[in-house]
Image (cartoon, rainbow, N blue to C red; front, side, top):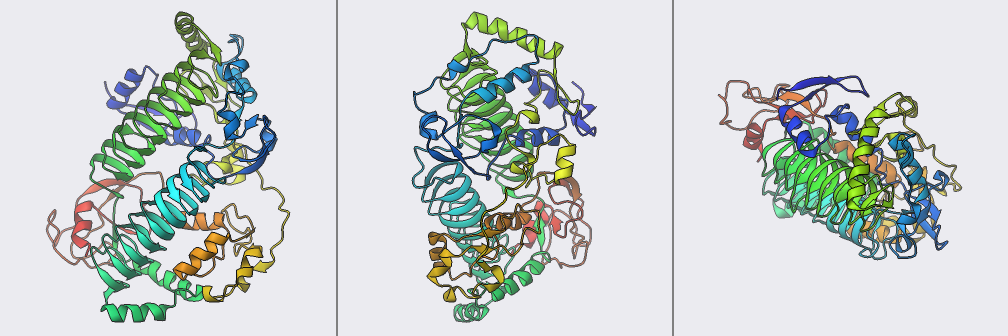
Length: 596
């Protein structure tokens, strides 16, 4: 089959469907997509609220709860113990299929009737961790999300198998981590990015196997370095004391100097290792994975994000989870031994051969259902025999072609499209904003909803500028203060304007000898993810020009085996470093020749 170029129904831009794509669609028995890969991703993301939590009330037991669903949505929300209990039956909300209405219009009616679990977390394995979402096996955690197997941690996203970690993104198997991004197997890593197997490091980037380093970049198995300069052990600790990192003012000076240094050294065109035939970013131990982002141990996948191993394979347009998943198409936040799923959100735990279903577990042969548990042969939450299920499902698919759903922007949804964003219970700025930022006006113009922040009932009792400079001078009474965020809502970071410190956080900062934060948790999150590459790819070429980098900022230190020392490297690649980014980007071969 030949490749085809088509126009996206949403953004109107051209996109390419490759021969192997057609083969996958044929295997999954779906038509080729009418939206381009990025528009499909944004549409899926519009159903993923990771970090926005609201006060709500359980509609069954009346308990006050924390939920991803705002109380003004009109959704029926149960606390997690009630939702998982036998006190209600999802089949009580069954609907007959109405061939006078489009499928998605009927599905929206079902969504508004059935009870929803307040959070997407495993409440059984979470201990003293009420304010976590998309999380399991959490103990003493607060405002962590997309996080599993963690303890005594807070304000983190993508935290895994870690302890005593605060303000982190994509931090795994680490302890005593603070303000880090993409750090693995770290101990006492502070304000560091893209580091592995390192301990006692500050403001460092791309370190592997290092210890006792400040402001370093591209080092391997080094210790006692400051701004990439070696010191004796005695000199290092004397200099570290002089740097006075317990002072906020001193910390900011070191940070500013460090960031200037980082951009004087080359970066590898993508983050990843132990891969075969991959394209994308943050990919590890994977094979035949393309145009994908942040995954470990995945095979034969394309246009996928946030997937994990055991293994996960044969997937397209699949966003988040995995954990022994196969033959998945257009799915989000679904996983654990699932197979042959199409167009699903929040489907897990052994579910198989189902389509157009949300927030269900242990299902098989289900079509168009919401909030089911361990059911088979159901349509719109109504139970059928196998024979009647198969006949009705075939008729509904035909009906979806004959009477497609048309959204407010005139976009047509036949069989083969993911759920329209109009059906999402979440506003754009509750979901995809950090990956694909839009203004309120832009989001509404594109057909998304927007949630304006609610009026806050508190006032700051102390300004960020009035906080003590050094952590040693921070009194216990600071826990009773409402601290004004230094951004004062003059940013695009969903600033909360003011915040409080929690007691474990103050104890952590004292133990680490780090100053009090001046920004609210949301602003800290957005400032941190500036160091995370986007979910987009550009055509790039190695910027190694022989003896120097193209911009003449970096002088190469040694020979590069893939090209003559006097010649420009000819390697090209797809990279998530945009052409206008300040980093010096090398191919893998040239980059590895330069790490020290």
